Amino acid sequence: MTRRSVILMGGPDSGKTNFVGRLWVALDARTGALHAAVQPDDIGFVLDTADHLFEGHFAPRTEHADRRDFEVTVVPAAGGDETKILIPDIRGELWRDAVVNSEISTDWMAELKRADGALLFVRVNSELNVSPLDWVTSQRLLQLVGADEDRDKLPTQVMLIELMRFLELTLADRPDGGKPRLSVVVAAWDLVDSETRAAGPEAFIMKEYPMLGGRLRDTSRLDVQVFGLSVVGGDLTVDEDYRREFLEAGLDGHGWVDAYEGPSDRWKRDPDVTLPVAWVVGV
Image (cartoon, rainbow, N blue to C red; front, side, top):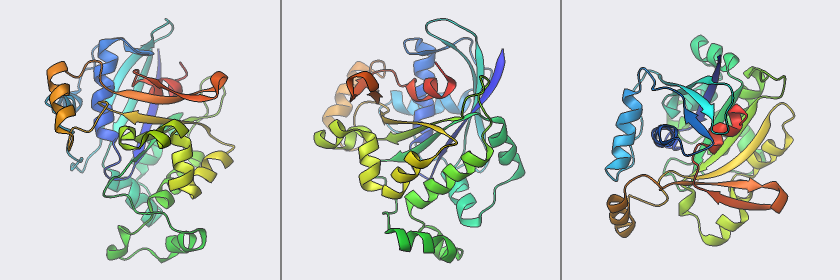
């Protein structure tokens, strides 16, 4: 059995923690492209996150200072070899600070070098998203930040581009010799309007974060796919009608992913929330 590492990246409030909790529920239910082969030894924080979702609440932002790893052995639904994957879940502030300070701990650098895939998160309408700037201003900003009062002003797309650079420099080739894979996950995708949803999450990135969109198309080191993600299928925070419906029905069957369907040249909604990880793993 091989041991693979998949890195979750994204700034504060980008949706990583809620995804990990929902991912475990899907893996354990064995209804998606990836199944949990065995029960993990230690998934306390994942179960805590899942409990929030079962109760009709999103998990609060991660406040812990240390890394928390979700290690699980998975097997493709269609059959095949088991793969042990390690998904570290850490505060988005670590990734933001890594960009601002142009440095990362030796522990995390080693983990990046062991990994051959990653998920990069950006969340729709997050209060902590910093609006994109024009090309000239954004490039200059990386040289200007440094003072504590300026850190929160780092544009979200500039941070994501720098995280991509970390991945390009560090991720290992896949076991089959292929390029490292990157799933770009647009979380809270259920919040966009119908026209935006029909155009797909890649078009959303190109419109809202054009520098990032151009970077995704320009990379020759990474194999990239974009996904739109709704962890529970609706907004539990402000939509009381949906929350009531959700609590009556339960978490099972809620949540979906918009993935690009190449042959039909369209974005297709799929209830399988394991897809962003399954694609990185190679299922």
